[in-house]
Image 1 (cartoon, rainbow, N blue to C red):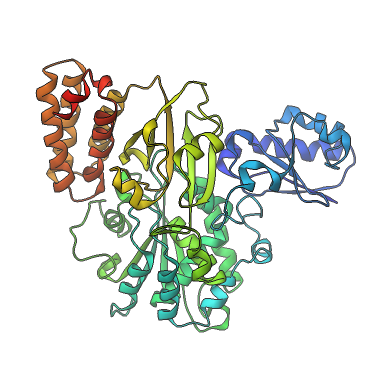
Image 2 (tube, one colour):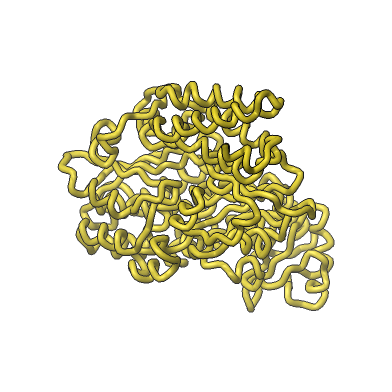
Length: 521
């Protein structure tokens, strides 16, 4: 019986995957053909969704994008025998999935199973090296687990890039009767979706990573703080947690080891600022999401005042492969102090948008053209914003910068969560700079004056610049205001808003009605 795979990922569903899946079942029944329909995750080739794969002796064969109207024609072409001549001649035939150039050139470590397995099949997860990392961790001391994570070079993938092992070691050595592991799954940056894809398409890898973290530092309770706009992820995570509990991979006496780790999902408050770890903890405690003063750090006094690991989804989902393959295996990827791989999310004005996982060191130009295929409009790509709404705008002259935390720091930019949003030459960068202030004003928690007031004043200053109202004076005021926000804000929301503003001003002064010399004044 042939297996046919249709993604159940939100992106594929939004593009009609559910209707396509139903049509395939109906068509097979009408023709008296027996098939097994598997709902896998998305491979990340969004421009080809719904991407339908058919099992063959040589591997899965891809067809896409497949709409319900295409299904009858695919059956007519014999796509259940996908390597036959007639099926290969079909216009939606793409060839062996693993040979597709977009996938073949990637280094998929964290996303090794995404798009391959049925997200809610524990048997499928185990058959693809799932829970090997936890199996190894259960034989190790907490200190040895933390050392492995430290030696791998893994840094926080949520944006701050703080070494994960150092954070874990602090929690490990903090004396307390109760400790926590909190996953920051409040993915709110524009152009980002890697967290969502892990949670929807390979939830057990996140559960395994959090369990390993709990065992490492002696935490017995974990929480996934999930973005409220992710209903599919909520349903998938809860079902995966239920299955993990039934199979003895969560709860009391995990796999007979005597170790305990419980896990629950909590829906986020819908505020962008709750992506900041201390604001998240306030919200998780049932309070208004306000940023806390530091110190103390969450690793010392976190959730309910107890030592707490707070890590991003991708950080925690990467831990299992480190404990499975070893720290050196992971550290062998990347460059400089940026070790391993980064799931990069291509969005905006590009022909081919989707997820690409590559070792650190790839360039923006490679991503924009080799993977993204250039702009969707066919016009020149003028600017890209990397790292979400608080990331800098980079001009074409910086497209050869390698994806590396330190290299981005040298050009006053951030990698952040790995989101890349492209703009062609029709973009007005002054409007984009104004939007950065407007976004900050809308999302500020209001606790600190530089963010709360600075963002509002920033919108007013930008309006005056765009109207040509004494531009030189307003630019001076803009830079002074940005310096105050950079140095005086409690968290990254206010502290990083000047990144998009000043990068737009510095690299695209003509959009502000200024010469380069005037913009630098």
